[in-house]
Amino acid sequence: MSRMRPCSSLPRSRGPSRGTSSPSTAGCSENAMTTLAERTALITGVSGALGAAAAATFGREGARVIGTFRSRPAEAEGALAGIPESRRALLHADLDTAEAARTLWHRACEMSTIDTVVVNAAALTPTPLDGADEIWDPGWQLSLQVNVVAAATLMREAAATMSARGSGTIIAISSWAALQGSRIPDLGAYAASKAALRNFAQTLARAHARSGVRVYTIAPGVVGAGMGTADLDPAQIDAVADGLAMGDHVHPSEVAELAAFLASDRCPSLTGSTIDLNGASYIR
Image (cartoon, rainbow, N blue to C red; front, top):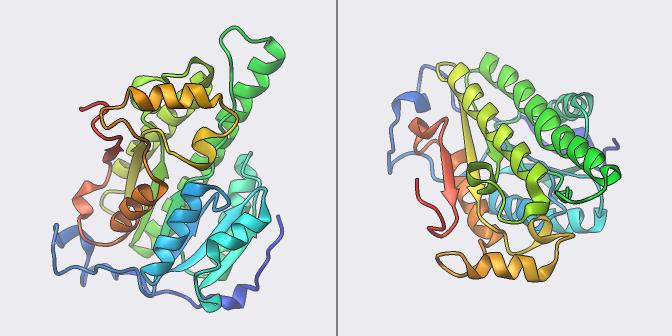
């Protein structure tokens, strides 16, 4: 994993202090902080459409952004291009093992105090039900390693650091498929892995509820660009979209705006929640 900008480029942030203006007593207040100025967000997978939208939105709200990418460095650079150089940094990270996640966290912490982690990087690997074992086995292994093991490890590391400090926000990007299975049969491993991620986020939220750490899950529907439609038959994607209540995809900017809201201190009692963003395609 190579660092593309110096650690010194990002100053230390001052998150909300415990025992003074603690978010645990703030409630859903309109007077609470509405921007992310003076905070630092680690956002994984910024070379994709959703991660890029999150980086741009957090940057617009005043946050310092550390973005990660596995491939497509030009897209990753472009995702952060609109953020002033003093408030952005980029790391290469192939998050396919627990150790890679730990290494990323430690390196990010060397760069700044991390106030928010958006766990967005994921593997969407088709695992056809009628496919060959040579496709099925590695597809499941990759889905679980990236979407569960590495993601959960990053969240665990972040929660431990944030708990010791008394504040922090972790946002896991799951999927509507986590709650009802995939409508595309080839994505069974992806759906199962995202369900596991959601479950772990709930466990983590409960474990750290009194330590100032908030953990949320966003479950988007079909995202209309980027990884959510990569390597899939466009006809399948369109067929799923046609069956949606609103008849359209979720735009990456919608997920990004929700993540930025959750990263603020405006409604801390939402911790542990899964927020569905699917245009009423299912209602719980």
